[in-house]
Amino acid sequence: MNDSINLVSPKNEQLEKEQNRLRVARLLAFVIMAFVVAIAILVFVVNLTLPINSIKQNEQTTLTNISVLHKKLTQYYLVEDRANHLTNIIAQRKNIPDIADDLLAVVPQDLDISSMQIDATKVSLIVSGASLLSMNKLIDDVIMLQEQKNIINNIVMQQLSLDVKSDRYSVSIQADIK
Image (cartoon, rainbow, N blue to C red; front, side, top):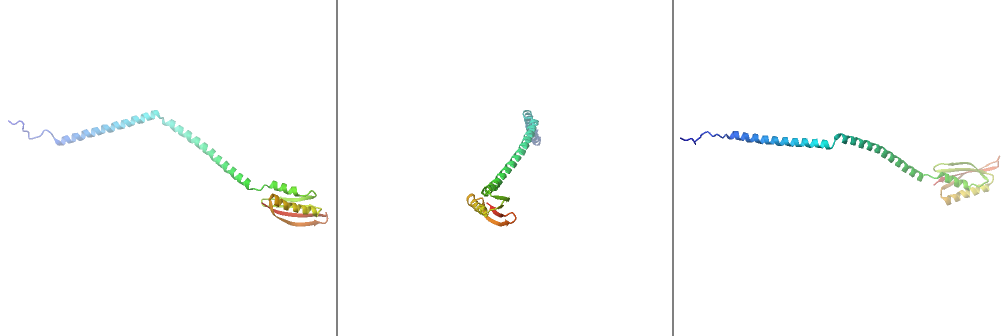
């Protein structure tokens, strides 16, 4: 009679929802698996084309070369710094041989130099001779040396003495070096 009336539905909604979830989970698992396989293949290809060992060896070689060049660069900077300091020191120091030559040039022939001391700031000269005229000429020439060459200043005659036994005069002159 009524075959079309079916009070129990052959479809189960709960079962369909679980099957849909299972399909989505399978699809998601397949997509994740495909993504992992693609990454693995990409890493494999990169390893084949760019060998890591050779890159590490190149890195070590480069680091060694840099360390050698760093040592050379450090030595270069030290030498350059020392050269600059030496240049500054040479530029600032007084030219003592020229000062000595200029002083020796003004000493008359008949006078003998007993002592000459030159340091960084002062020059001291002790001269002896038989004539006071030669001593006077020496003092005048040293004063002229101060005015002309401008290498010494503050000339002081410290001592003028007579050695009675040898009948010789001695004069001690001290000056500041500019």
